[in-house]
Image 1 (cartoon, rainbow, N blue to C red):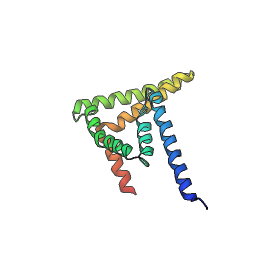
Image 2: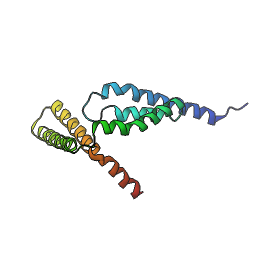
Image 3: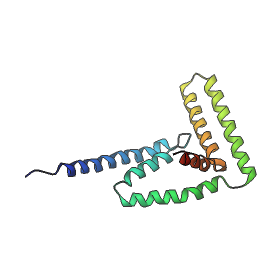
Image 4: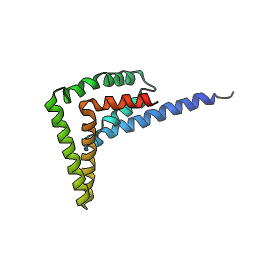
Length: 142
């Protein structure tokens, strides 16, 4: 009697997807403290991969998507002076990171300055709902 090859491949695919997702989730605590967006994209990627095969991961991913807007509103409230403060801080950090990167030869300082510039760019994009504007522009281009 011949075994069904598609079943074997689907089991391997499920196990492989879960292993990759777990490895990504295990890297979150190590990447999280680094400057920049940290482990948040990795956490969402790991949950996204797990949600392919597991309903509990779909629920967690849905919860994260649902509450991300309220978290963003807490960090970036709709107050004019706070918006300006975030913009000024992010631009100063981007400029400072650029200067450090240009004038140092120490690899650790260069790496930290690149991380600071990435984190500052993330702050700049998230402030004033620029990410929503960018998302709308990209969706309408398709």
